[in-house]
Image (cartoon, rainbow, N blue to C red):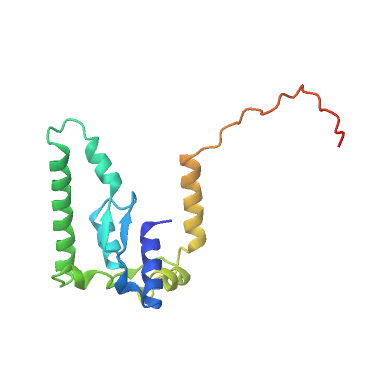
Amino acid sequence: VSSLLAVGALHQDLIAKKLRAKVALIVEAADAYEIHHFCCLLGFGCDAIYPYLCYLSLLRVRGCTLPLNKRIENFRSGSDSGILKVMSKMGISCLQSYKGAQLFQAVGLDKEVISKCFTGCKFVLNGAGFNIFSQDAMELHKLAFPERPQPMLVDEEVEELDDFG
């Protein structure tokens, strides 16, 4: 499941149950690695993002003499600047005004996805629904974990014993 879908659905559910102000949504995700991803997560209700795949990538950079903590600091600084740039283009000056505001327009999402995960978000074209997302998830799972032939647990030449009871 995409972290954006999960955050959107959880955010909407917490709002409906009047619990949103009591909960902080922190996302630990590999699918958030660009400024746009961070902005969407924040805009649909996320409070903090831990992009662990980005940090792992920074750990494995070849030919870089900077220590890891400096690389992470540079990444965070760049991400903060990028998020601030997106917010400023929308006329927003503080993160609290941006967080959960759903100022985006969805293109190509099914009405069911919009109503479940992004309630109140404007949408232009009807499109991909949960069935498409589940097919994508299954295809990615098959790529990550291909079927392998399993060894026989019992030899084919073994005789069965009589069942006496």
